[in-house]
Length: 213
View 1 (cartoon, rainbow, N blue to C red):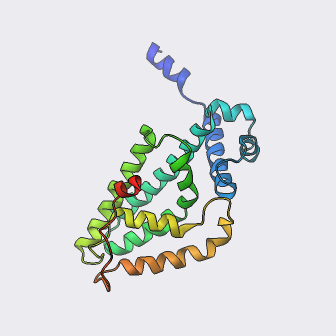
View 2 (cartoon, helix red, strand yellow):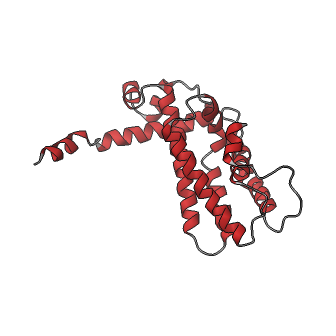
View 3 (cartoon, helix red, strand yellow):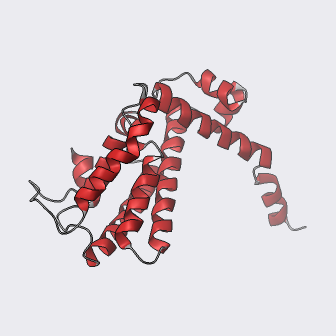
């Protein structure tokens, strides 16, 4: 066995270690949604079924854990956009399915954490954000080209609506609002269809507009 092969064997994470990390991230997401970003890490460890040391071995501080949770949600949202882009046929229908799927990731509960908990310019966060922006832009461009999506809306319009309509902020009974989510999102989506029945004030909102607000 070569030295390189030995090094890879030694440094590759064990399957149980990866499972523990996934359990921690899943438990953290659930508890951030239910209680907000200040939930004790000990409680997250308890829900994940691991010891406190395991949490700190994977995530040295709260910011690292929050960042991992946010990036995991953003990455799954990007995957939903990629699946929608791979569909053929109704371009607006693909956009609709993406919006409903991304709402189930409970983005609104994580927004306060993105804005205040850690470095917004961390490379991992910026990469996830840019990927979403590019994919959603392509979904919208395709629907516009098909004459199904009004021309005066931007990626920021869609993403802020998903965040605002999907759930109320974490720790404010957000789980009790689940039954209204997709109904209200569909009302919003119907308003995006072309031909437009009104003139929107202002200009199409970009993700950069949202970052600067």
